[in-house]
Image (cartoon, one colour):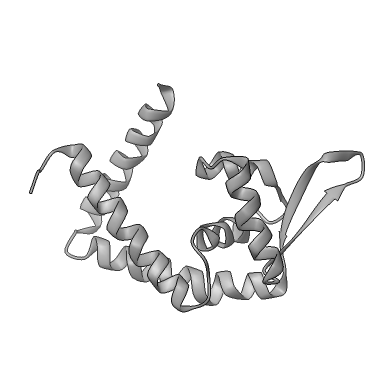
Length: 140
């Protein structure tokens, strides 16, 4: 197997994402919904376009994910007075419950599996390195 940086990064991201999607789907969540629920738990009432920016998704993709979440009763979307162009996304009680009791444990379990065998210092170095890589890539 190839050991180049890009290959290892892609492999790690792919298997991590597949595991999250597999576990989330077993709980009735569709792809993309778990990360939205997790983000909204900390940023409830954010503007819909911010979700696209944060996750580097096209507006149509975000709209599709949110539409299915709204149909499932996980979120509601509203426009605010004076701002008819922007929609704001809010978790419902069902959405908050799913984020806290389903999504957060899935992410925690997947992170624990991914970081198994790494010391706390190695985990901190890895996270700082990934953050720097992301910042570098956003510059270009």
